[in-house]
Image 1 (cartoon, rainbow, N blue to C red):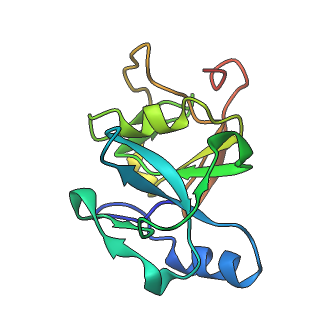
Image 2: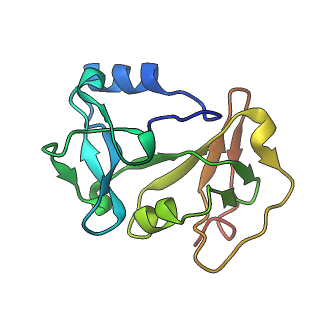
Length: 146
């Protein structure tokens, strides 16, 4: 999951339901030493704390989930296109976080955040699918391969 900031679809209810159902739930946590995000286990939404960039994160003692063990990653963005392109906030943190993910990468957006086409750079990772409040977008395999 991700902890939503202004302009992003809020997923707290879904996250809470997953925790109650016994699913292993993770959120990005900023690793200051390596200047990158890692996935850390969320035991309870009430245990989250504001950290780097003012975003809610699991506490520093929360166990890390190896990225290759994830089944599904829900990814926020400023905008997405139907080819799996994602426009982030320009720092590349999510691209670096996702580079070792073999799981399905699903962009999560509001309907107005879907664009016809977005510019891409070599380091940009494509989503496998995108979900909005009103639709599900399957990304063609060739588009979502990187």
